[in-house]
Length: 77
Image (cartoon, rainbow, N blue to C red; front, side, top):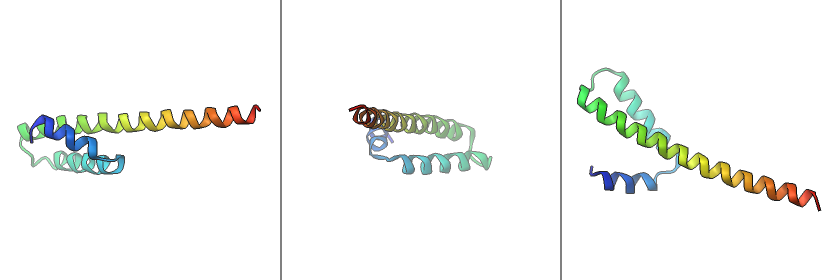
């Protein structure tokens, strides 16, 4: 899969699907039956999946902070 295609696909993944793919990669590498070059490629993909999860979590955290700030401002009235 081309890097651009992977990025497009990655952007379509929600948090849960991203975690599922990451778990599949980890299981594949842990079996020890994956050739070294393929393991490195899978590792790189896993790192991109982790970054995607962090982006999603960051957006959720920002939203929670906004909601919390709005709720606190409402209490202060």
